[in-house]
Amino acid sequence: MQKTVLITGISSGIGAATADALAQAGYRVFGGARNPANVRPTLGVEVVAMDVCDDTQVRFAVEHVLEKAGRIDIVINNAGVSLVGPVEAASDGEAQALFDTNLFGACPSSKHLAQSWYVGNGDMASSGFGF
Image 1 (cartoon, rainbow, N blue to C red):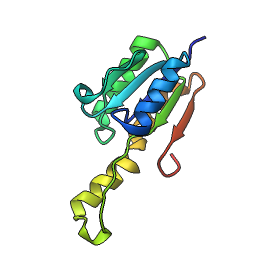
Image 2 (image 1 turned 180 degrees about the vertical axis):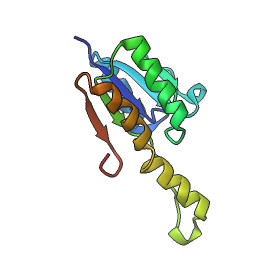
Image 3 (image 1 turned 180 degrees about the horizontal axis):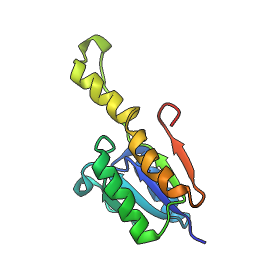
């Protein structure tokens, strides 16, 4: 049976490469992005609007994938942002945005997916801090 994967942060970098590799390997891939219009189209990857800092948007994205695929076997919490430069140059708002995305951003997808996994099996990988 084809496995269904949801990957957050597929706009570029590791997320885009992972989505492409898993689609080529035969997985059904859904990729979350804050700005779906900015994502390079990839054969076998369906892009869904998903800002990991917006709980409502994450819930809608998870529900969309479950409606389309019937299940989510694997989630990869990959969304992340970075700041370049000395730490003392970062504003409080920039630091908060970094933690909101990189650390707390894994919480909504983990929460909404865990609810669907109570009736089945699933695997979760996070590039964040232990979620």
